[in-house]
Image (cartoon, rainbow, N blue to C red):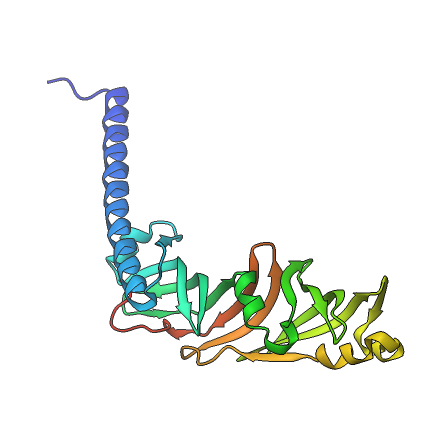
Length: 240
């Protein structure tokens, strides 16, 4: 019997390697798909959104990692989540998630439409409509006892549990002035009191979650959150 030629041996090794890669890839994709399905189910149960929920495992070979109790980095998005009389689009990114529901922490964003922001401004938003420009909140409409047409630019700041809206400048009677200087305009002096800073609580947050930032985007007010390492927020049981 003739021994295998080097060329034939190389072909056999190449075919074996290709088969192994194909099998490993198929196994990884199957495990990853099942893990994503379980994450979507769990997120849907916890968030009860009106819209769809999507989950992506973004770490290479994430599917095979689940067999050893690791999931890796996870991104979950959900549309139409109801919280505190508001409807939010939520996106969560977690690092080094395990099948036991722990993670190395991460970040999240919640986007609120400007129609809802307008309704929740209270006295500050009486007669004004909310929008966004260059990260600042823009309020347009009429204000003051005389119903003056105004455009207000407000800065946004946060603490761990609250958002503060601070009007900085206002365009009124053809002039752009600082809110603090409104007292110098006889017809607009009362407007300064109406444009006092307003702080809005974000309410009870899951353990380990804190409000970290806020900016006015084109599609709504975007709240950014930090997520501490440990059990994933609202984790009940395993993650996948």
